[in-house]
Length: 334
Image 1 (cartoon, rainbow, N blue to C red):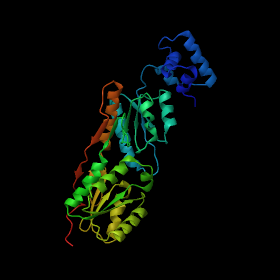
Image 2 (cartoon, one colour):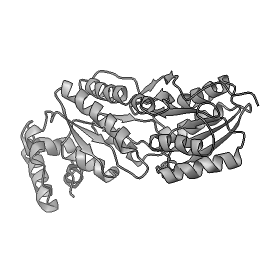
Image 3 (cartoon, rainbow, N blue to C red):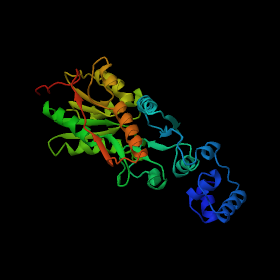
Image 4 (tube, rainbow, N blue to C red):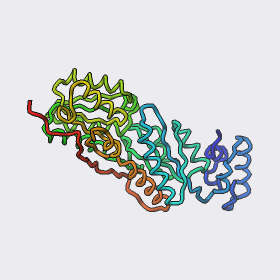
């Protein structure tokens, strides 16, 4: 697909000059206009109808980029989407939801045709190919932090601190042999930032005082059973588990109970997940809340400020909050 940047390069002008030449919003010399029109004809460029009518103004549409990759837990993702949509409506904006794998070409396609005023990008990887956002000429906010966030606007839960908080709570209850049941393996292979940072926090909190293991887990009950069996085989003295995988939280607890461990009598469990998920289980689970509603709202509010030229902080990290429920207890004496 021919983009406005291709036309600009062919005509030897800036993309904004191409936009003005096509829309008539600003005076352009006759010579420059002829060069632009010739480039349009030669390349077969077809400007989006909305872009022509809205050149120099706003579409009042935000793009929410949520690639529905394998390993993503869709119900949690949709909580973010609902928050973004409802907050955007309060600002008189609609939301264009992009669920495909939108790499560089996808983001350029959306921004070059002036479909949207700004973008919110989710499922951020440590080395994310979409970081060309710095050069796309549209305000953007990432829900997540790449390894090098300089020059970007990012907001997220402090997942590293969340991992540390979970381990510290278990240690405070006297547990010395603990494990992290994490996201599906492909989430780590992609270098998904939030999953990697939970692992960093979990392992950093160990500091030599605890025996700990990290186990990725597929999002199925069968996988939960296999991980439970493996943990008890490799760590027979296990008394504390942190779960960062909403899809297997309930089947994992059931698997441990079927293997003879009572929660919390023999095994304390802490999850990083939405409060509603943790509180609704048969054994309500102590959890660090995943603040999807607040993160979606913060992302939209940051974008609105950027659209009006107001300065915003590059980094916004929400402090994790742990709520005690019925799944944790002091370690029983050996």
